[in-house]
Image (cartoon, rainbow, N blue to C red; front, side):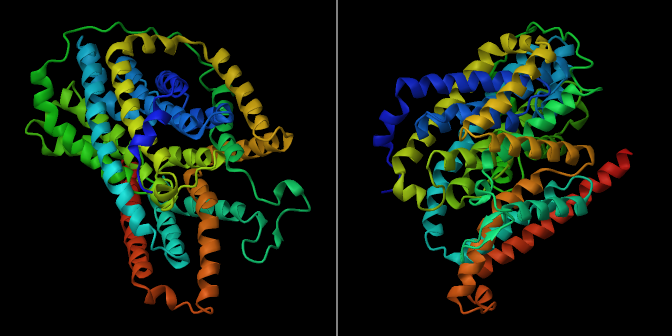
Length: 501
């Protein structure tokens, strides 16, 4: 079947789809601009609201929240030096000094146009490479998917933070959790303790809500959190001259370079907007003839950070749509939404659901245009929402967490799953254990186990068969190279953290 953009148009331009796309972008920008609320947390909370939606409507609504939140984090970063999301931190390096110089309008407009150009380049990469990779992936068998699962796990060191051993423990715990349920080959029940609720394993959605929403709520509500020291952040009125064409022309090379960096990093499983934004910013400083200007109010710095950050978001969908492997935490949550709405991601997706994929691709372009228009004209209005008292905000979020988990199957069991994983996530945060490796283990564990068993059964138990098949061997080599690369990256991060101490 392939991509079908003609049949996709009625799916995309249905009034309810367009309405929820606008709602998603606006909600995402508000969430991104509010310090303490994260993109994954917002997506986890929003999934239960999509139960009654059609697949295209639900997925574009969630993508609107996702794209809006990634950009929204830069608004408060530039205006009040408080990034709403971690990815917005790089934009604050030069954005806030520009605000102090009375140039906040120019900084926000540069942020908006850089994000839009980066997004378009990223969408182009998604539309070109995802279908091509899906055709190659149609040749994959169990051994190739097993190798691909290992490739996904090979990035654990890159998201390890300070301790590689803690990351490995978290990943191992995630793989253990993925074993709960029924054996995929012989049908034996494992770790179910006689409970019918665990026969099919744990549902990904309440696990995600628990891991990302509950720890944030507890962190903010307990002594020392945002609620305890809530203060009235005065919003900033946009000041200074508007962005000129000459300003944009001077920064265009930086924007294109940052977008390319973001596309490459976003397509690698386990990375994300935080890494790409700082990589892009560092490259802009490195290649500049006047590096001393950065950090003091350089427009190029805002352009580099924003183009690098936003351009990861569409390219992160490449491994998700083609192989069923999430590129970052947000796409892992989106994977849960695809599964919930019966859209099976992977190489067959482009053959069986070409109209849905076409609508999603075209919808992403429209979403990015909405984000640009909202950022260009509505930044000042969105920035005023940082004054919402956190007491009210997190009270509402707590109610949404519980009701959203319950609404999944109208069963209290999912509420308990959410609370248990929420407590686990909070404990991991307090003990400085990274959550992303745990999530990778939960998602990739079944892929690795099932395909390993199928490959062994088809080869008569011959382990050498994994190395004889060229495609499998090639992916395993890539996994080994990825492991070496991420280990080196982890050591560099470790050295930098030690120097800071």
